[in-house]
Length: 211
Ligand code: TMP
Image 1 (cartoon, rainbow, N blue to C red):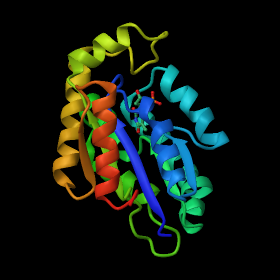
Image 2 (image 1 turned 180 degrees about the vertical axis):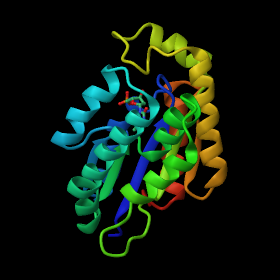
Image 3 (image 1 turned 45 degrees about the vertical axis):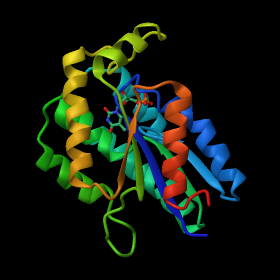
């Protein structure tokens, strides 16, 4: 079966993580082998960097460099090998999050991010840019996400940001989605969990993942 790279994106509190188990189970029930992973993270080195990125204050360039360093290790150790085995890589966030959080949220130079993206995501051998094949974008108004997060555990550095920050992050996602409409699938996350799941399952079926 064809290898597939599937990423999930959205602002904190958008509810994407609560659907990961169901997506993995659905794909497995259709005979797919799934490598489930996340960013920042997915390898011992990248998980160590994740702790720093999520907890320590730092300037946006430092943050972007660490995010891409973690990503490079993750790609080489986990993502490319799984794709080479013909698996589905199910990844909780990828580079769209960097453009949304560091680019739009923090206001960091997106040209620099695009350069780092080309460097970090050059595929071994061909040098082509590695991108997800499909990105499920869980879109939720930041005010509603903030209300959901208010009930959550102790917030990390990003979860503790203002609603204004998340408005910018959401607009960053919208811009990335508009630039690559063939890859992004818009999920209206401002619905009940069941209705959100229906949209996810329909989208996967439409893309031929669950025939
Ligand atoms: P998570 O809580 O969904 O696991 O995501 C970790 C946090 O890291 C989330 O607040 C978004 C943030 N993040 C970035 O700022 N840049 C990135 O490139 C990625 C992948 C995540």
